[in-house]
Length: 180
Image (cartoon, rainbow, N blue to C red; front, side, top):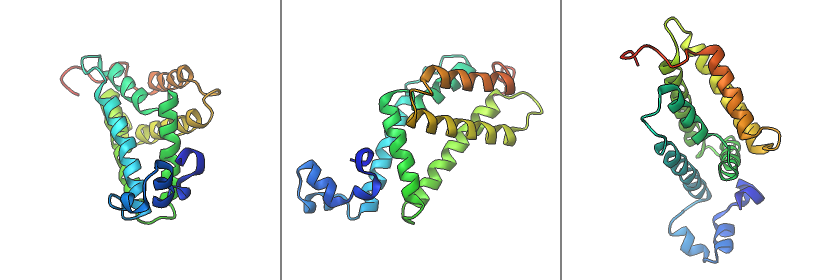
């Protein structure tokens, strides 16, 4: 429904009608539209967490970081749908103050994950904050492009762009053993 009609249309009443439930039955779980929207966002995060948890931890560091990024990027149609909903949530959070802290926490978590990847893969003397900002902007932009224009930004192209950025800006496998 959110993909079809947008977040504002996803009211408790509309979702209940689409699900064939009474409004009262749905209100038992969600007292407000904002609670319903927050639940949807939590579902998206749970799916992303499952994909990240499935990344093989025995892979070499750089490959593990790449696989984690691929798990979070809209490289499949399901992930693209999730990302379009996520972006709609961020837009809704600009005008719904009850959603703003959720959007901010999600952004902070993504930025923290990006920073950890940069720290893990960068060499001595790297500008960690600058590289984090660059990689975050690159990933956000690619995610938006891949979610809305998958025919122009295929999974293979997104992977190639990120790998090229890694090759230019980060050590090949991260710091020497024992300094991760």
